[in-house]
Image 1 (spheres, rainbow, N blue to C red):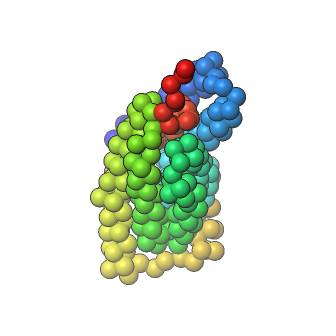
Image 2: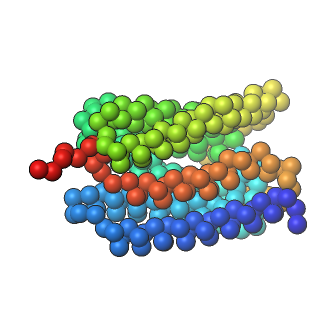
Length: 271
């Protein structure tokens, strides 16, 4: 068994465990359902998390290296056009889940800036997804540079928003905010220190090599019909870190977000 195949099997195992974790999380939340004013908000986050968990699970079982059209499984279900569609739905769901939580926190702590950031998250990620599609269809990695920069920007804005909420938050809210600030800070650091430079280097290398890019229309046909099966570690090694973190830690964060209960503001003492 090659190293790439071994890694792929690990992704599949993680996807199975993630589905079990989401199911157990859902059962626990239903057994410990909060009062009626917060439950609809929490249930919506849980449903959005389900889309993200399922989308990441699909992509774990059928991984795709988009631009070179590399796959692990010889099937149209592994094609770039399908994989990118699943990714778009999953990523917009995760962005919506995060935006809902920021919006709720901003409303309960009274931060207008936080509310504006919450409303900007999904549109910014939608723009990121458009750039991702552009990169995948035309094979221009500059689209991925813009995409990943927008994800990193959203993380930074979220961290600033959560820090602004801190003084008005109660003890329970601060525990969540502390974890979220650390996670968001690490994510932003990874994006701007590793991911964005990686795609930038690929773009520069392609430009230097005089790469011929495709049109969007030709890219749709190519992404729908062409894929190359490879279990060669040399082909996949650059994708291992981000895919492993994406299909594990990011999924766990999505599941955990459904457990955050509002309001974050400290409750007044009872008489």
